[in-house]
Length: 125
Image (cartoon, rainbow, N blue to C red):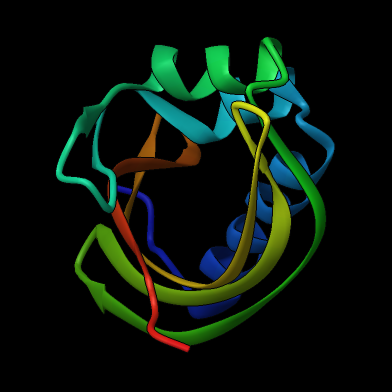
């Protein structure tokens, strides 16, 4: 069992943010668990393939963004994170701007930290 440290999780969150910003599908493929389960703000269940396809097809374009890691909790071989992202971009051509809060579950799989679960919501202005 790999030991998870807050630094490992913080580094992984930063790698994920940079991959999202650049729509780097190869990096996202490494950071997201194959059987990822995520929930969108509308309640839709999302998969890894859906996330990767949104970046591949440029359906989701992040023009500007910044993140802040609000909390990291480590429970044995699993880490929970809460991250706030301020972002501006387009989703399927529709302008999107605001603050978003992400809840992610990270786990070491084959020696690499991967997101195995996530949800996110837009915060009120």
